[in-house]
Length: 349
Image (cartoon, rainbow, N blue to C red; front, side):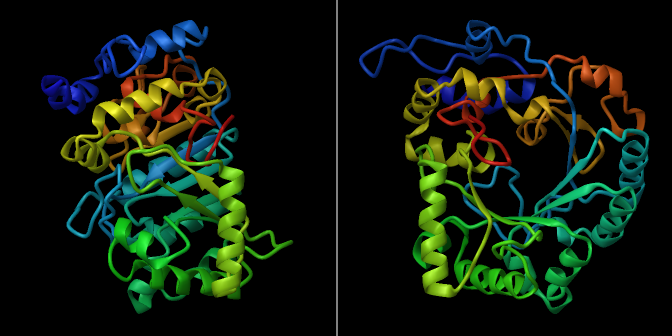
């Protein structure tokens, strides 16, 4: 399947359907495009329900270089959202009150020089804000030390990646020293009231598998994390989101280099869940790239698969067209529909 492996990312970027598995001794799966699975589930074409979330990537610059990163973020990335594009986002939010949630991502979103100005503008519109904080940014430089207080001041929900509750597994996935800095950052967030029982200051953690396998039960893993982090470090948090790694960018590179691509795709296909497919996040979300272009989800954004309707840029946002569009799908979508499903808020089924 060498030619298939080489073509996977290219064909996804082009927005074409490709076949991922051969019928044979490895399993009873034939060549099944994701579109066909949706058709079998009476879900094709996949349509939005009610668009309530704006997920905005404010830049690909990051202080970390994580092995599983689907954004391919890092310190050398120069793609940063401008204040002009941010203002266009604010204008759209003001004109569309149904967009109640604004989910800010990166890279490390806090590294955008206009991050705080943008947050303040969103709060003036009385929207709920989620920030995808990698935790170590809080410890990266003195100018970020006050982030926990800033988050609290603006009642921001903090969602942070923590691969595991011990040093070895975390640093293996995200880099040396990441676990120690993450623990200190979590303690700082707890000190201002985040993650505590009964607190409205939401602190949620994200778990991504470190290899070519699906995440375990989200509920069971959450209990395990809570016990370990409380016992060893006195840390509390609200929820754990178990997210499936999608076969794009750095994780795709890992799958190809390790020879795990076919087996991983087979796992995703075997675990396809129609209930998860019916509840995928792209049905309620619009993803905005750092340059203002619109996508069905953050993963399609990284593959440059723009929305299939009029108004592909935030500057000519067309709410009616977006609500009535067909969502663009491809083989990587199996990652969001496997098992209990996966989204930026964890399991969906």
